[in-house]
Image 1: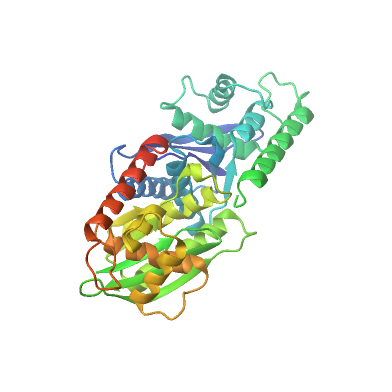
Image 2: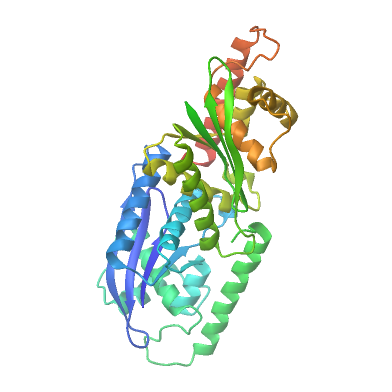
Length: 194
Length: 194
């Protein structure tokens, strides 16, 4: 099972490819960002991101594509560009018959650390350990894309137990279920299309 | 000059194709909507819209594609799906080297009627007259797409003068310029990517 994770963005679109190993092991295949010129025309920029993502998909032939889900009420200055890139990424996968999933930041926390209140540093420690990295990939968009790919592999399962204890498994599944419910409520309230 | 106007949407994506004639005349080439199932998965839905739009572009080979610009702070329930469709439409045009423009609803009012305060009925009356239609195309998304195409043809020019008087021309150009300035202010404030 090979997963391509995407942190969608118009200026920097992060991508990370991982292969599932036995149990909770996973290996890093590729990670990076596709950029477009901040001052450029929107068609030139989206085309650059589209071509870069298509090339990554062709090169690595993932079994699934997982994309960070952004909500309109986040109301970041870049939310429309992020949504446009998300649409482009979804179609690139769908044209090739590759299943697509969208995961919220809460789902990433729940899947990777087993806690919906985990901070970024905790997520990053798990990722570095599991993927055998001595430093995080830069920029942050690249690391975030890897976390989304790992979330897709581990969704609905317990957290990785770096200390070899399985005690928190049931609790972690509850955290995931709650993150999913929260995403569903948010979507139903604000965004009928997802 | 042939323009494809798009009213982006995930459930109903309106499109309208018009050819410019001499002066302010224009002729209707095609109008319709591409639909996707409201309950379907996002990848299936976006792929359906993408294929439908690609087919329209291949069939009519427009010289320009004009898309309604939606802002994040509109905060409609469907804004993220609309932005995703916009991204897909922009890439479909850009891949074929067709120039893309985004026009706001205020720009449509200014270009078609010469007044930034025009209501929908006024826009529709001008459209029906210019394109020689005895009734508006249904659903509304299809008519809106035609208005966006007409806006692209007439942007920055005076309004169509159905009464053959040219008196309001300079004033209409001011209305357009103000609509453009308003769009730029809104964009700078809320959305750095457009």
